[in-house]
Image 1 (tube, rainbow over the protein chains, first blue to last red):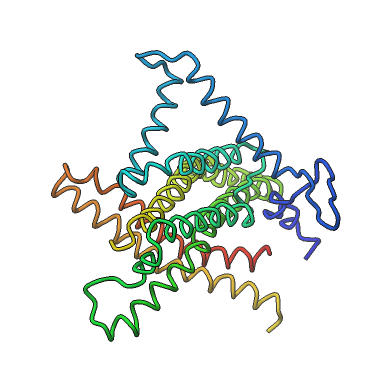
Image 2: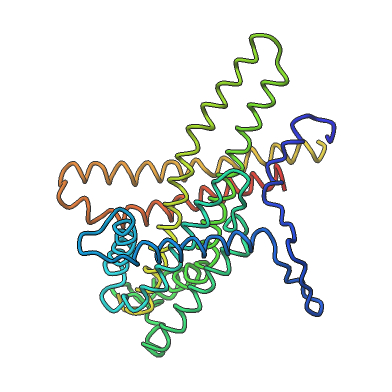
Length: 257
Length: 74
């Protein structure tokens, strides 16, 4: 298997972690890796973007200021329409999640850059942050009334006990999993797909002879077509993560529906 | 059957899980479009719901794609 030419374009290699600064505390390895570096880059980019675009505040916004305002309005509208007015208390949390995931996804699309969100541990940590917030807010605001979430109205009692409540509980328990796997798998699948088509170009251009080499144009066009799709996915997944966060927060704030 | 062949066949079979996600996504966007053409003024307000349904459905397809990738390259 190792002798096959296709194997040197192993599409999983792009997700390898490298230690940039080795840090070892006790038996825990908390080295600063290329993943951590890209996360820091994403946060620095967000801070610079928001700071620089709002330093020269003007009533008629310039280009940068309007981009910053659009991103703010976009997330604020989303939180208001899904979680209601009292959900706006959690606007900073949702906005931070949205911007971090958006920048991490977008920066990952730059060639040779690493995508932090293509590792399940990163997205799972983000999803658990959301779930813990939802649980704390839910029980803090409603007390045991939060359990009303598993007891929807308008269902016959026997059906409720046998089917609806167990399903609601299972669906609630699987939320952190589906929330994290959705983002992770989308990023992973997208990057693997791009890499595969890119490796087809080289494989065809090198492997084929004569005029057949021109066949490499087909995967090249495909790669070009996939790139905007991936940019769309990068944005859409950040949006989906944020909107699901506000839907879950809505459950915590208004569990009775 | 040797393990390598079983692995590749399994990866192919795992992809069949995407059939359902494809059908579901077609339903979601098709119904959204037909509703949006009937009542264009209400379409914008339902965009969030559209994306929510898209995300929940698409996740299932992505899960099976992920299993295929893990079998192929994992």
